[in-house]
Amino acid sequence: MKLPKSLGMLFLGIWLIVTGLIPLLNLSFSGLGIFMALFAIAAGVLVILGR
Image (cartoon, rainbow, N blue to C red; front, side, top):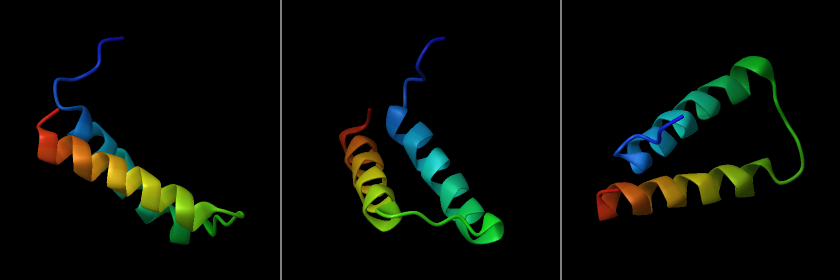
């Protein structure tokens, strides 16, 4: 499987999907907020760097 040229956009898409599914599926676990925040930061940095 090849990674897309824009890894940041892939991360952003995954983050948006997961963010939408969390309230729909009532997902909750310890550290969920921290995990989502770190994933959002990683996606944002990759988008800004153009990767």
